[in-house]
Length: 488
Ligand code: GLU
Image (cartoon, rainbow, N blue to C red; front, side):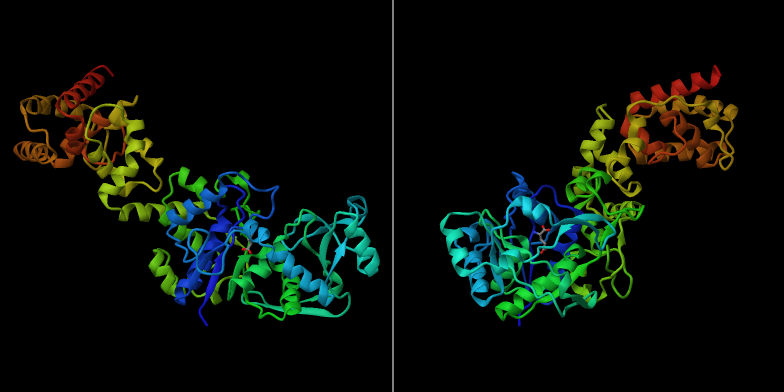
């Protein structure tokens, strides 16, 4: 049987890292097995719907390379792929009525006030407090006549699942194993809401079945509801798909990754200067690792290596230091022209003078982890910062403030005579100057680079910096360095 997985996001805003991981794992499971990856838009919760969020979903899938085989824009014969359109076709109501006929579901006309009185506070599987209300089956006992009369009178109603109150239900999760719950804990959850829309709880089962989904991948917040989903499959007589619940993702403080952490969505991370490919690689390792422990993997490599049996149960920590490192590795591997395109806005912002920005990009490509690192590395091209003359002192190159001053004074006229300010030509000139005077090259370059940059470390050496700054600006800076050392 062909493997079919789906990504079923709700259009509620930016793409949370946890959702991106669900999409990625579902994609990898399908592609690893040569199967299909389906996109389904779960927009039945009208209150949470955010304008423009569907576009974000498409854009994120495109930017991350997770191309779907079927979806609202690619018909595969089991559509529509948007739940609100499926509502209009009466799909969920049809199946809810089938359950009512089988005694597996029932109409409930309880008022909000009555339901309010059934609420109580509990702690969920992630240790968080939440309010639940276990329905007391009040409306299960209505007579046929009462139900008819209520419906006729236009009383608002929901349709609830009719779960047993005794015995146990067991279901199997590929990651968490067999899980058994007491049926007394199973709430008669709502399948169809009073607005006629299905709940996620019902729609996911109906759609996963009708769309031929073989592996259901989702976050572990759905684990506790899965016995109820299993009962629905059984009530319909449908085959239960394989469940793959992914572990919780926490921040470094081991708290659930929240919007407030500032890096909880794909879009946040891109804005912070991370590359989509690096984000995908990083997210793949949030709860999974290949047997050989390789860390840098592009999408084709992930497809090849991904084996869902190795997904972990324990929470995955979002380690920003690791993401930064990984991003740096991806930046190093970028084609220089592509890197320049990405880096240019950051360089332009830090360096407004007219100079060869592509050469600056070439100097920083191997030295940054994220794009915003660029500013701090290249700011001296704009202006030499305030610096102490002690910066000229360097043990390794035997530079002191005194001999640096002498050196700069003797090199200045040579550079004034130099017409070709290319890196190669400058290097050749300074190398022969060093040789003639019996100096080491480093002894010549250190004071120059200090005067040119005012910094202890720079991307690129003195001659590379001079090439970018050009003759006039370079000479100006060296003269300023001489003045600084003379007047200290
Ligand atoms: N619509 C659900 C969500 O966005 C999907 C959960 C699932 O993957 O089944 O959380």
